[in-house]
Image: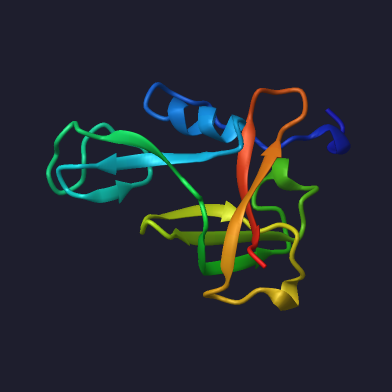
Length: 139
């Protein structure tokens, strides 16, 4: 396969994560909520943290949050990412509390700052049924 044909590895949903990926395909964000602990939960799991109850519910959220931290990778983090430099790897703290790892798009490097507001940017991967969750500045 030629370098220009490389595509980063795509997620392989499992039963536990399928609702997350289905929501992204619809350009919405859903994460789990636990009534027993009154907490939002991410990454998807079968039991609620703290209570170990199986009461997790999938609920839609805005997906908005703040940039918790980031790094700029100027060399490929894996061979399949050879065409994506620089890659701005970010940890986003969702307004609901959980943090997730993603990448920033549509922003100049000198405009990035920890604490900046970010919003979801949905990347429909051509030729697949996969939508990836990226983030861009909210303003």
